[in-house]
Image (cartoon, helix red, strand yellow):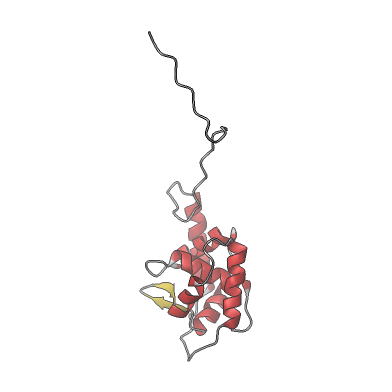
Length: 158
């Protein structure tokens, strides 16, 4: 696949997170992209990336959502599980550079209104008090004790 853009790798990574069990809606894909990158790519870049990846047969639309094709799932399966996000994006870009188009595929044409509404819905969901499942869990505060040190028993009452 030539040329390979960063947003293509980010979109594939976001789809692999959001469409594990069922096809993901646009809002879920935007939330996963925000989680992985810390920022949402521009709407025009996302539209171009959806078009490019679907024309190459890596993304398909089904059941009102979007999911990865078996070729894209295989690309994601070869990525290291313990790699951090920049390493994963680099690995995905390498796989995309080596990918060859097999046959013709239907391209997904999204509009700015569709993606803009998804981005606004994601921003609105961040401000609500409901629980967002795509937000990383905070780490528990560790006690300032040395390993192997026990707490003293409380004083006995007489």
